Length: 68
Image (cartoon, rainbow, N blue to C red; front, side, top):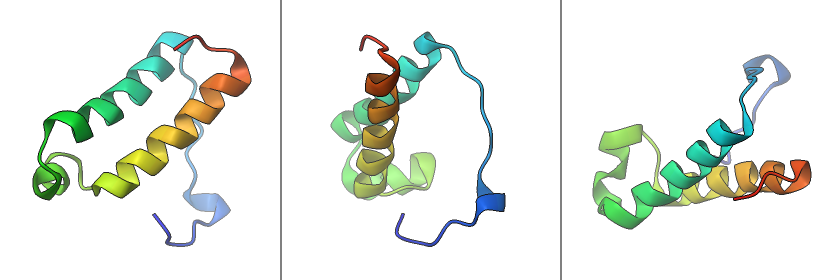
C-alpha cells in the first residue's frame, strides 16, 4: 500500500457504523483464518496491506466513537 494515491483515486463511500465494524472485523478475520500465502487469492492484498487498511478503518471508527 506504499504506492502513491492521487486525489482522483479515492472513492467516497457512505456506510453505517455497523458496516464499518464489519469491514474492520472481516479484514482482521482474514489474516487470522487464511494462510498468508493465500491472502492475495482471496482479496488481492497481502497480510501487511490488510493490517494497514484495518488499522486505518479502526482509526476512523475510534474518531467517530463507533463502538467496536
